[in-house]
Image 1: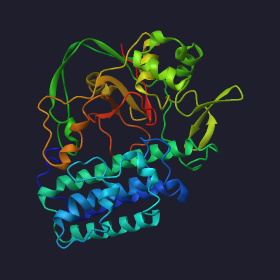
Image 2: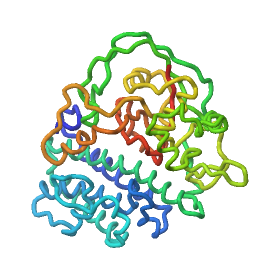
Image 3: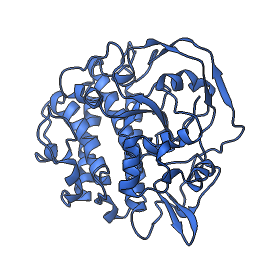
Length: 397
């Protein structure tokens, strides 16, 4: 499998594979535990998938790419599920279009949990039977990382679903936030020179991280922490959303079309800005890093400050010297292939390469990123208008 990197010379112990599989699969269901049954089906916008679809799709991945081709005599759980839970794999066949996922009142939530039990049982049989050869470890680990990606999307989508309920119900009053405060703000300086970026060494990575290569960077400085809610509020109060000169033309069109006035989940109530969080509607924490900002807003704020967003190469070079992990951070870099990138044949070759157009790179991780799923070479990417992810701003000059 060239789309990922494992750099292992021996097959991991069966107990390690069990533990990793069960931990990842269990966490998806743990994220859904606070939900009511009605929450599983809602799709308030096209980019949000209902929680039950995430649970089904991540299960379909293991069934489609491991069990069907590699477990002898395996019988699919339901012949229609390939149509229901295929996401964008043209190679695999036709599928429910993304905007219609919220119309799937059937299969039921109970059916999908039964599907997960069925596939998990056969995946254990697959591991017990010694069918996981060295050649298949790559797709197995990709399946785990794929599910972790959907865990982040799952929490993001749940927040959007509940945050657009007029009652602003909390996801969980008990949820603990690992967010840090922005203290001791300063600039970290880097001299002009040739640097290397891209994945190297042991462990997993996606294909778009491979192809470590040299880049020339001019002198630059980058802030060691993220822009706070207070700093962004200053931008709002200074008329930032009312002055076209700070915005890209496309961004200004977005402001006018949506009558944008603040980040997603900020609400002016009785003359006071409030913020919907996973704990419900609260006062804005002015010291916390601003969140749910799209590229247009990030670039406009940077322009207002007389600064800019870092390139993804600058961000990666600086990563060991800055605090990151609270928010996915917009960069000024378009999502393009690294030198020598090659899209592999077959369905797995559709994983990243086909999306290398009309999107911008984000770096780091967020409070929604599962533990162990982040690294400084990770290349996330979204279209410029998206706010619903846990995105923030870091400035450079």
